[in-house]
Length: 494
Image 1: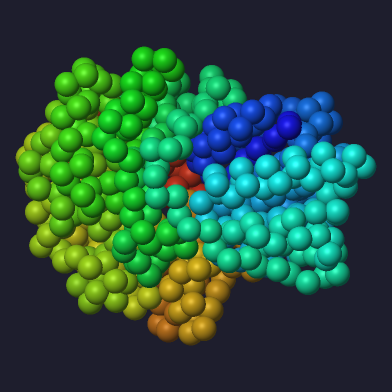
Image 2: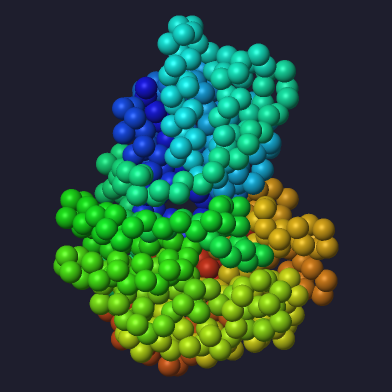
């Protein structure tokens, strides 16, 4: 079959074209292994309009991924496809996984896949191919006929039958043997159109960057984290399998930097030690790799971090979140500030760059607790401090708190786009004005300290990528005003 996989346009005030979409790369790989002819359309880097692309390709099956800020774009993409071809359209990703009925009821969506998609995607592909052989005049609606039992035994999907009823099948168990998956198929992406993971490393814009997962799942359930919708069961690839992918990325694809996307890469430290030792033994430690997401601070000892450094790791990240101990407990982080302090000290001791994730506007935050977060960030002094305003994503505990006890300031899924400098909800005495003010203050006070400015000016990457760095800073700290904000100014000028 001809399979089309789509990553809808992601409207952000910063450049998102750093690496191809890893989830689609995995789906492309399993489809390729099945024998399908695969096409990938990443709207962030494509010039050709989607309707013209699909008209040219004429797919048999379409898969679309979507997180919350993307989901309306995903629905529009589905409609554009249905306007051209009567083919099954499947949607998956974080947002449809949390709210499957919402997408299942859309005119152009036939099937919603929940959670990890590879096994479900292949199951659907096999059944569709079988159905097409038995029905030469096949139409997408035939799959959804109330009397058609084809989809009833497919785990992990939700769909609306032709009689208007939404059916949600039993969950599909998570993939336990991750080594059984093929490596992500990047050959279907326009690799030359992606930039790099910078400013995470000293690489210049345009470096060939790739993402990699060594494990899936997270045994922790922080109240703010959208990953809480994914399997709680933590599963890991074998060190040999991960090293083989490192070798493939470096030797075959010419990777110049690699970003690990694990949610909890160091859950099993012995495995991580073996992985690092094998990377060193094979000489694959010359290409820098970084941790895109945070690793567990309570498992970040100097032995583990030292092995990571020797294996080519350049930077580690830690989810600090807040400088207030009570809020740290309330978000179920299951860690304390002293452990976090020690983790940063350990990382710096072995020569690793550090990144800290901090959140302004968590439930219970006040001007005083936000001040603690800013001061704690300055105390830890990571190379990169990422301050985000709390965005309550569907499926999280914070979302339930914000919708039931607070006032949501987002009226549309498009409003969930981050880095816009806008508070997303108010709760009790925590106003949008307070959150936005402290967020901007956090960036200014952290990065405009004399010691920080001096340190920044001595880094090679600062000068290599100066235009991009300045552009990102301007968009984050001084976001583009909305039409509503400009209206009084324009009316006054008139």
